[in-house]
Amino acid sequence: MKKAFDNSLPVLVIVSVFVVWEIAGLIFRIDEFILPRPTVIFAALLKWQSAIWPNAWQTLFTTLIGFGLAIIAGLILGLLIGYFKWIYNALYPLLIGFNSIPKAALVPVLVIWFGIGTIP
Image 1 (cartoon, rainbow, N blue to C red):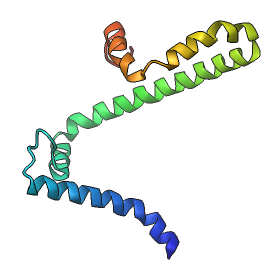
Image 2 (image 1 turned 180 degrees about the vertical axis):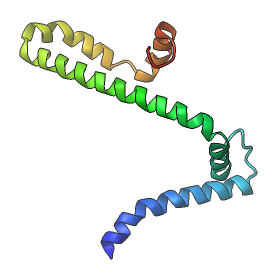
Image 3 (image 1 turned 30 degrees about the horizontal axis):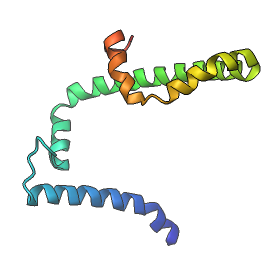
């Protein structure tokens, strides 16, 4: 019984959040432009699904290709850094400096440099 409760607890919390969100949106009359209620979001998804699905699949495809390339490049770079001391010494300051930059701050710069779409 406890295991069933533990397994259902995340679902109960998520459903509760959506119910509270819906009720709060109705009670406080929150403008749909500011914070649309879950039912409004679901209706928009149904209305625009013919445009959403192809773009969602394209985004998933692009993300998986990028993730795969990052794994390959990271693995090769990690092996080189671990095997050759001189590569480690040469790249370590660059890696530390790059790690200190918030990745969200790089996105606008990369979009300006490379553009938007699958290929960039």
